Image 1 (tube, one colour):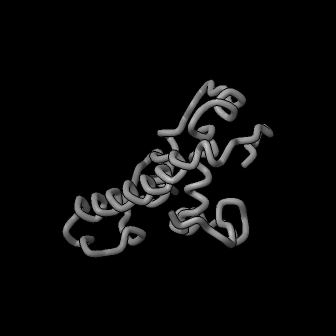
Image 2 (cartoon, helix red, strand yellow):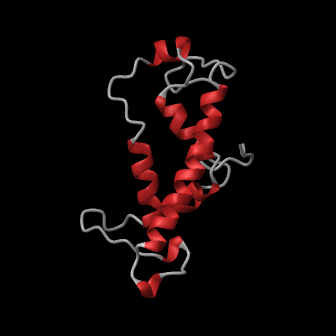
Length: 129
């Protein structure tokens, strides 16, 4: 794998972390969906998450599903990550790759943001760890 900055990342060295990132994304997404459905007004219980409306005045056009992905991505923010050093030495990929690869492999993300089929965030082939 190569980062946007052109640094090569050793996929075998980062494999364990990559698999964990995929597994964790699915687990926290399931927990979020359960919490949103559980804690919405009684009249909305039992509906699928995309039918549940969370409204935030400062984010009027963000769905509850999109909100999950925004909050999830926030956890990967690295203001001054040394991508070259991480790519060469760490047992994990740089933050951008750790975020984008699992999201691209998660069909729910592509649905939430209406990513075109075959685009980088909605590839034809996905890894289903």
